[in-house]
Length: 68
Image 1 (cartoon, rainbow, N blue to C red):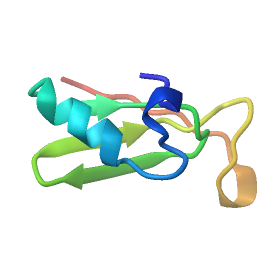
Image 2 (image 1 turned 30 degrees about the vertical axis):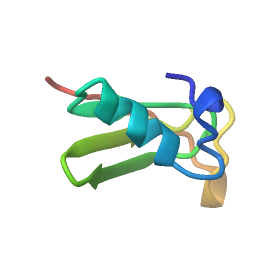
Image 3 (image 1 turned 180 degrees about the vertical axis):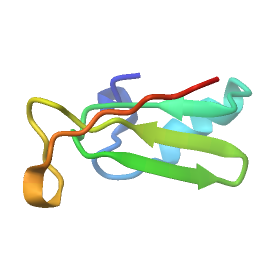
Image 4 (image 1 turned 180 degrees about the horizontal axis):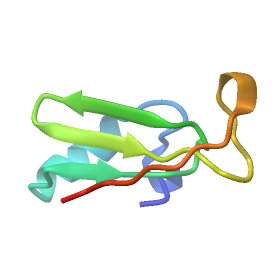
């Protein structure tokens, strides 16, 4: 998901609730342009960041490769 409808700039609570409601093993999102990789209980939470407009510290471009 893009993430804006889940208010991911403030919290991941809505995103995780929707992931659990859909019995997801992983949830990938964008919108913040900041790379994130966490495991919340049993759900992988990932944001690849941004190649063009990175917004994390030092503003380094980032992307993610996920093998399933």
